[in-house]
Image 1: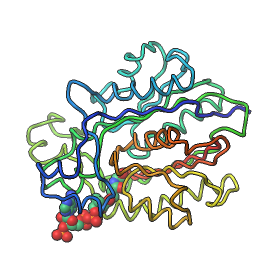
Image 2: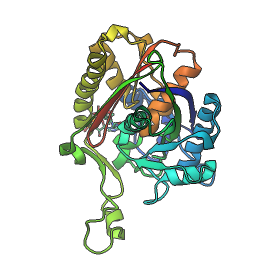
Image 3: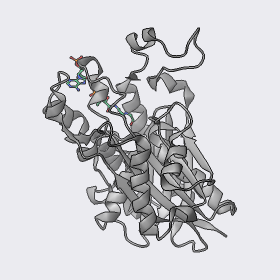
Length: 333
Ligand code: UT7
C-alpha cells in the first residue's frame, strides 16, 4: 500500500509589516478592537513590483523542495490553491511552474478559499495513493491586500486579511507510520453569498467587468461575519472529530492541531470545545492575520521550524471558509 508523506515545508511572507495602528490611516478602527475581536496584531502586505501571488508561492516552494531534497523537476504535479490569482486565467500554478522551470509538469489550480490548502493536500494525496504520481508540490498563496476595501466601509474585512504563501512537498512512502492518514472534505453552497466577491462574473448582461460594477462594490469582498463565525465554530469541531473517529483516536491523542488562522476567538473556542490545551494548538494569526489558503501551510511550517512537530506526532489540519467549505487532514508525522 502506498501513502504520502510531507517531506518538506516552506513559507514566504512579504517584508512589509502593517500593524493595527497602520490601518488607522485608511479607516476608523483601533488596535484594541482588532486585537480583542480577532487576536491580530499585524499582517504583511505585498509591495507592487516586488511580490506577486506566484512569486511568493515559488519562494515558499523552493524552501520546501530544498528541505525535501528534491529539485523542481523531480516533482510530478503541482496543486495550487488561491482565490487571489495573478490573472483571471490561466491560474497562478502555470506562472509558478514557469518560474520554477518545471515545463511540461501538470498543474492544477483550485480555489476552495480558506479550505484550499487542505483540499489541495487531499487531491495530491489521492494521486500519490493511487500510484499515478510519486511526488507533489502543494501550495497555498494569497495577495488579499489589493482586494480588500481599506476604507471604513470595509473595515470588518480589511483588518482580518494578510498576504503570504506556504508550500508542502509530498512524496510516496510504503511506511504507514509516517504519512497522511486521511483527509475529509465538505462544502455547502447554500451559504455562497455569506462570504464572496461577486465580480467579475461571466453571467452578466454585456461585459463581465464594467465601471458600474466597481462603483457598486461588486469587486469588494462581502462577508456576513457573524454567520461565518457561527458556522465555523461548529464545522471546525465536526471535521476534526470526523478525522479522529475515522482513525480511532481521541482529541487527547492530538499532538498539534493546526487550524486555519481565521480568528483567535474561533481557534480558542475549538480548542476549549475539544478539550485541548494551548500547547496542542498552533496559532500565528497574531503576526500574519488570515492569509486564506496560505494560512495552514505557513502555520505548519512555522510549527516545524520551531520544533513543535516531532517524528511520530499526530497532527491535525482543519479549515473552514467561504463556500462554505470545511476540511481536515490527520497526519502521523
Ligand atoms: O477565514 C474565514 C473567513 N472569515 C472569518 O472566519 C471571519 C469570521 N467572523 C469574524 O471573525 C467576526 O465576525 C469579525 C471579526 C469579522 C467581526 O467581529 P464581530 O464581533 O462579529 O463584529 P461585528 O461585525 O458584529 O461588529 C460589531 C461592531 C459594529 O459596530 P456597532 O454596529 O456595534 O456600533 C461594527 O461596525 O464593531 C464595528 N466594527 C469595527 N469597529 C472597529 C466592525 N469592524 C470594525 C473595525 N474596527 N475593524
